[in-house]
Image (cartoon, rainbow, N blue to C red; front, side):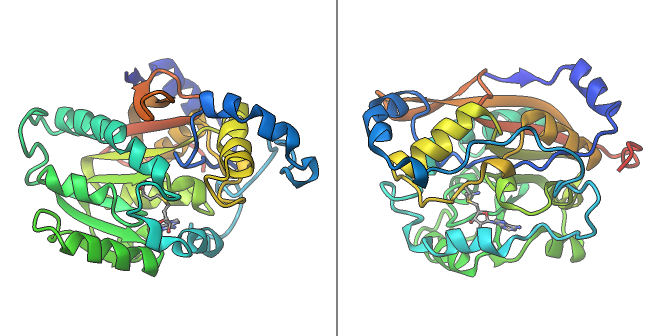
Length: 325
Ligand SMILES: C[S@@+](CC[C@H](N)C(=O)[O-])C[C@H]1O[C@@H](n2cnc3c(N)ncnc32)[C@H](O)[C@@H]1O
């Protein structure tokens, strides 16, 4: 299910002068938000309380890493990138640490297919609906999204700040003629902007919660998007439900992810994402949440954006927003 972003939200955000708060979202590297949490309630009871992370603080105040006063324009956080590089060999292990991303892929590809086909007036039922479109997958990891995008006919570039990830992505894609043409490169969006590269669509899933400056990151994604092109981002809401499931549940109880994979304070709420993209000249048009079915172990699109969500926006061709930055 897709949310049309209400004009009232756009208006409210446009009139906001508050700096974006420090926030980031968790990856879909979370377990079942419902059943797994319940199933492991007894494990929670026996867990060492002192080993749990502190509860989320009150909403952050004042300027933050969202670009509300800092001088840095780089979004790269080497420590965050190192977390993924250290487990790069597991990218294609569908039962490994990236299992949640593998399980989410059908739902997120469904959103991308639907929104991009509407945006570019393509037939979503054709075998290669994205044929002829230039796409970039920013923070592609081992390429588990880049590959199906290439199979949909797109000309795909995948970039990631972790060299280990790019090596794995390249080796895996090269083994299949339908994905061998993917261009992989170890770099950041900011560095690619300096090369004046532009794409019909820019996609960055589960990355913004791992960068240092989400507003600058959004500006780089915007610069990579051709005028009137499309941008798709997904991330995790900075909500109590996400804290309970994605951090406590996935990391401390189920041990699906290494402890520290996600920081609650780095998560981004949907409102913050819409505002950051708006400041980067991208107008968010649709948003959808993801929900997990513990019986099928599958994810589906949903109206519920309280934990994982995905957004699609259009790069405005007119001059950048006049909103105070
Ligand atoms: C959770 S993974 C998501 C992988 C992929 N987008 C997916 O959803 O399947 C986050 C990836 O973003 C990369 N990353 C983090 N910060 C980055 C940055 N500033 N520029 C490029 N890649 C970055 C990490 O190295 C990691 O591979």
